[in-house]
Image (cartoon, rainbow, N blue to C red; front, side):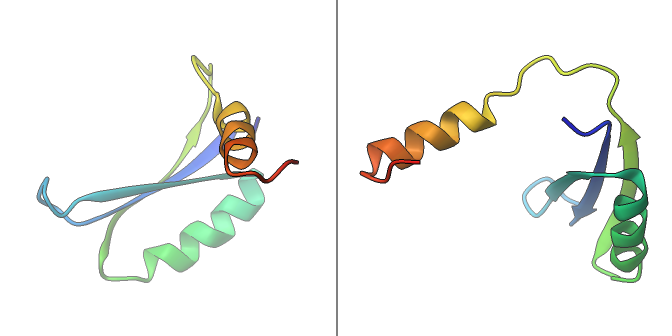
Length: 73
């Protein structure tokens, strides 16, 4: 798992707020953050250091999704 997460938010009010995340190397995330910061619709851009992961079942859920749909990995 990546040690850094890029986080950005569009929308101010709860019903219109959307928070996005991207993982990767710190250098790659900085480049993406600079591009995102130029967008007036984006209100917050941060790069967060991941200290500890409590739960990460993404790989398992993706495998279940593809196997249940008849697509095997």
